[in-house]
Length: 562
Image (cartoon, rainbow, N blue to C red; front, top):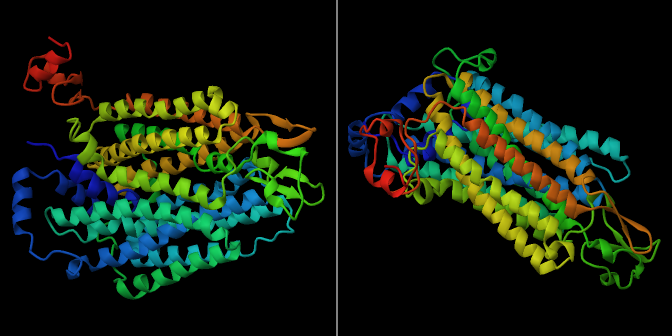
């Protein structure tokens, strides 16, 4: 039997299971079984697909409504991170303090991932979607209460709690976005619907990137304007969920898996993949979420202090990223806790920088099967495919650490060279990381196909949130303390060395990527081997050792296997 391709799997079932514990009922196993149907059955289903299947079809109404709601929410989810982070930067919070502000946001994802599926199966997707949107409004509303005259300790506690509600809202809302694809899919495969699902996945990540940009850009107007604009987007989304969906959509028709079952770790391959997922996402968040924007905002260390006088009438005398302190009449760091040694970019550019990464990541993830794994004959992927790309994932961050430590562009503060290097490193990582994430999305479907979703997939996506939490907290500590304090000319304490701090975060990301790849080796799934094109086999299929049908004479010969 011909194996299903990653093109079909990743664009549909992987998406619907991404909060896979979300549906929480036995129906999910049916969806996976559909993807394992024979090619003959698939072709028959395609032939029977009614013409005119599209957005106007009433069967797709839940998909269209939830997609609109989910995508609008996604903009606000990306924006809230930028608004909190960049506002905190201007209030002189350190990277570690900001990392603590995101702690409950990530931790909420761990537990909400588990509970959301049970809630959705009991009360329906409409209920969880409305609750998620309302909690997002509540979280943004709380952020209006962040006062300038509070102590840093009080502000950290308050903002952390506000962020917790945003974290819960995110995963409750994702439940609808990730499961409605299954609920509106009739029996058999429908290629046009799968294309719509791929479109939803790509646009979700793209709009989150737009949210990152808008968060930074609207702060240039005002903090309150940024919060108010995002609340407006959620208010626009709410009526779609309230009036456009059936309250019974997504409720379980069978016994629903319980939270207790999620921790019955009887699926070896999926549990190993979960551990690898933890390290994979930590490898990104060790440097992306907090250290990178802090570094981009930080000014040149050697252009601060008494040797650089300024006046309020001509504040442009200071280097970008620095401010003229009216009490001292010389250029100072906006945030000594944020370090110095970076390019000192404005908030709009920082938001665009991170938003561009998210958009690129989302689009590459959507197109990975067509552009990468299919041409390399790595479809459908197995554990060796992920080990291969997991090892490659180590190189961008390793190169980043070496370049930042040793390159004259960073050591001698050559602004153009610094920006160029950062763009190359981040773009390369975004592409490779997206490929890894896409392969993971396929493998979780493959390994979880015989279990209920809440039991097998819930633990997997919980580990995803744990990885982000570990990376975020670890990055705050490394960025703040790895570089040591910098004394600018004239004895001015300019802050910690942001250059060395970011390099240390890249090292941690490299180690985490390596651990993810090594852990994946434990998975028991090597029968198919690993190819790298039509005439190169990196790892022979098991059948090749016996000269069976799996041996590819062309590939074995060209790669030196005789």
